[in-house]
Structures are given as C-alpha cells and as structure tokens.
Amino acid sequence: MVLVAPEKIASFMSQMPLPHSFAELDSLVSHGLPKHALKAIVDNIGINTEERKQLLYRIVPEATYKRRRDKLSAEESERTERLARIYATAQYVWNSEEEARLFLHTPHPLL
View (cartoon, rainbow, N blue to C red):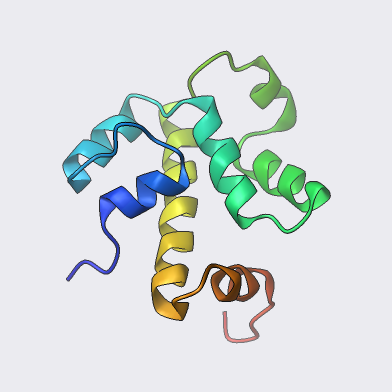
C-alpha cells in the first residue's frame, strides 16, 4: 500500500521531469540528486532561515555543501529523498502543509 506517490515526493524536491514510479525515483537518487533538491525540501520544511540552515547542514555538512558543484552524493541524495518522503507522508496524514510542518517541528515524547 503506497500512501504517497513518487511524483509528490519529487515535487517537494523541485525535480523536473517528475518520476512516475518509485523505480524512476530510486534511479534519480542513486545517480545523485541536484544540489537544489536539498535546498527545495529544506525551504518547504523550515520555518525560519536559521532552522533551514541547521536542517540543510544536518543532511550535508556545511563545508561539503559549499564545495558541491551540481550533484549530491548517493548517500546525501538518499537522506534528501527520505526527508522529502517524510514530509510528503506527514502532509498526506494531516492533509495540510502547515499541519505537517507543525507536526515535524513539535517534540513528541513517544517518538
């Protein structure tokens, strides 16, 4: 059972053209996502500039991010896609961008 389509996940990373299957999405990730994909998902999730920077540099260290020209490594791409998938799933569950963002930013004692 798939809750979130690969097109939705990729759209949060500003991927064009959108993949139409998880196999296509996996192929994009394994070949390295463009650097702007990480920036796009961080901009979708982050509430303010400082928080966006912290999140971005948790996925890819600051010095490494600044050295990257065009593409992220496969590992960095996997983390980026995983973050986009979590956000897409939260948005599906809460049926609201704002509610999904609030859920991701609120500490949960059971998690």
